[in-house]
Image (cartoon, rainbow, N blue to C red; front, side, top):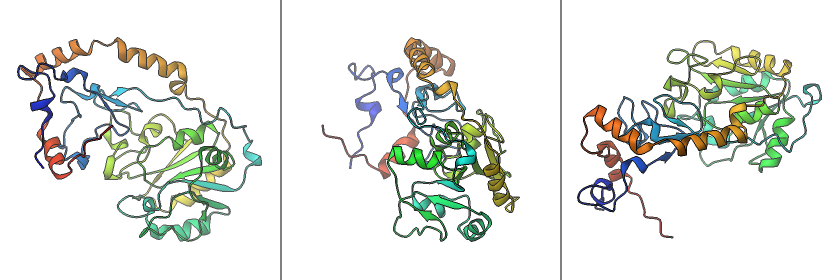
Length: 311
């Protein structure tokens, strides 16, 4: 397959006057563009989908390298009644939607640890993941399979804690948990990432490096809302941490940055920015005459050709 390059066909230039100006190219990405994320053969240095900079990445959380924080509106708790912690079931909801999440290379909790976790918790560990071929679900978990949104919210509301196991690295799950007043337990690897990394550190958004899970929420909250478990140095702490979270009631959290009003303000900010002027200043600072797409993106596309979408 001959790869038709954006630079040659679509980017506005002296040869393609009807092309798309680079400053108009934005990427909606849930993951941002983490350093060390090799999905697109990216270099071990700051990068973005648009060479002009991270500002052209529209992301769901506050991330490093000036990625544009657009975010989203969290509405998980609006139509679900609150249940006091004392009335909840002795259950922990596992934050995983795929059985592959329990296995390498995705997991941060080794599969061999589950028997001791199941034995150490005097309650049920609820698993809602899809059972995938070749990725068996650990024994002892209560498997209910994938749920629709309302059923999931009810299960979460009725739980005393939720538990992350390393994958996915980012999701809405911890925020939904806390808005129901359910504490969250998350894994991290202390040798390369702190328990509560700042939003300016990519180690909390580690892509496929499995250093931390849900660094966005861990950067702003600690116990009794968010409990961190070091899966490298203090492996015996997990069961005790789960118990502590289950026995420590919290009030539901309303995230001000996830209200409709806050999201609307950020969308308005996005449309009020003079992106053309910002791109011109960026090119001047870098001494560029034109914007050229990074070679590593083309190298990736040559190995993973994209099939055109026919409307």
